[in-house]
Length: 212
Picture (cartoon, rainbow, N blue to C red):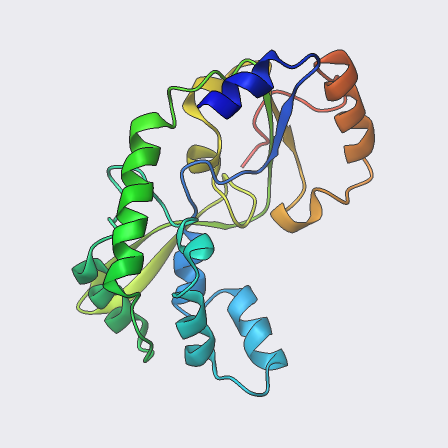
């Protein structure tokens, strides 16, 4: 909090979020289920490890797990029973995170729930992206996993979970018809970033949601 206050007091300071998963992303669950294009591509390139072995590696990285959904009404991924049910529903054999990792995630989750909406958003600008389908949740019925998709997202992050609530419907929020991984290198971005840093806003992107 002290660091954030210090940054906000700096002259000309701006934080630009490019599709940031503010409250997490269900794409991580899709990766851990072995269904996402990310894990499929890695599995085909890595001749030394199977898909399940790669997932075992992922579940040991707190930085990956901290991208999981953290809203109060989402599955609580700090609970061992949630992981056991999820792992079984994938039909794959991989080890769930250790109790220490789950405890760390639990503290991260509670801290995010308690403070994510309380910061000063004055100097933040958010650019939300658009792709065809983005994971937005899942159900387990009869031990079978179904990943739900929405058109309101950028392939990795949904608008609902990515955009901070305090920024929705404001002039600090912009949209662009580009997928998550392609945004930073899109031709439009450098002029947009320059505008936001120097002028505090840009007319190069709209504030309205793309048609889904």
